[in-house]
Length: 119
Image (cartoon, rainbow, N blue to C red; front, side, top):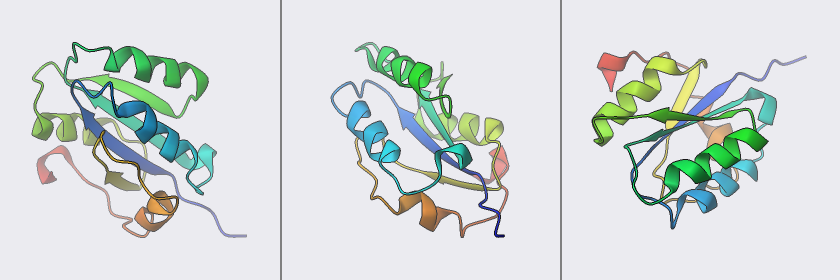
């Protein structure tokens, strides 16, 4: 029996209310087992309701987490995300994207551990 590794997806965001739901929906539709998925939306103190949307998804799907980024910039968001990942494999996507159904499965081949200083 092959063990499926856990994969983390880091999504830096700031004021992405128009896009974040579609991004999360595409990850929910992904073909990777949800019990092996860790989705981190690192929000840069959005002022448009992005955080509330992510909180709603997080309540319905425990593998989705909201991380706050008080410094508001993408490099810090990536570092914050990497600091809290729980997976052997990690990938990222833009909040305005809709990842393909195979995105997470393909990311698991990148099985190296990142540190916050490597981003």
